[in-house]
Image 1 (cartoon, rainbow, N blue to C red):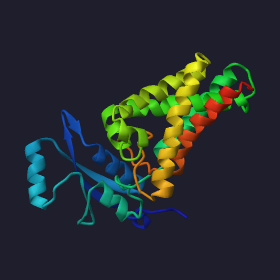
Image 2: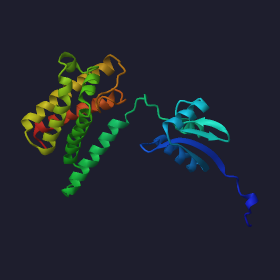
Image 3: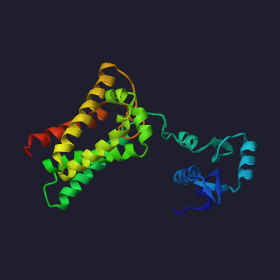
Image 4: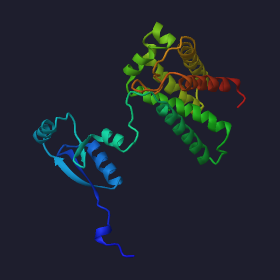
Length: 254
C-alpha cells in the first residue's frame, strides 16, 4: 500500500522563544528545544537576541522568565513546565538526596578497583577495600575544601567538638584529606591511625546523637556545605569507615 500525502499525519508544531545573545545562550532553551524535537514536534525556534527584545517579549506575554513554549496556541511555560506537560519528573532543588555521597562512594570504589587491576592483583581483595576507604576519604575532603567556611558552618549544626571548638570545623577537611593520603600510601601509620580514629569517632558519635537520639532532621556537611544530603545512615557510614580502617591498620593483621 502506497502512503500518500493525504494519509501522512500532520506534524505537531510548537513555538519556542529563547535567549540567544552574543554572550549568552539560554541552556534551558536548548533543553526545551531538544525535548520538543524528541517528542516529535516541529519547532519554530524564535531567538531573543537582545535584552531589550527579551524584556519586550516578557512584557507582551506577562511572563517573568524565558524560554517560553507555545503548543497549539497555548502557552505551556518554561522548560520545567514543558516537562510537567509531558508528564516528566521535575527536580526539586530543595529536596534531600543521597545521590552526591553515593556518587563519591561509587567513584571511590571504581578508582580502588582500577589501581588494584593495574597491579595485576585480585580486584575483590582486602587491599581494594583499604584503598576504597582511603580514596573515598580524599574525595569527600576535596568536596569540603571547595568552600571550607560553608562546610564548617553547616558542620556546627551537629558536630560535638566543632560546637566546643569552632576552628575544628575548618580543620576537619584537611585532617580527613591528610589521613586518606597517608592511608593510601601506607606512610606514617603512627599519624594517620590516630587522626582517623579521632575525627571518625567524634563524627560517628555526633551523627548518632543528632539523628538517632535527638531525632533531628539536618542536612549533612559530608560532601560540602552546599549539599542536600540528609544527615543519617550514609553520613554515619563515612565516619564508621574511617574508624574501621584505622582499627584494621592498628591491628597489623593485613
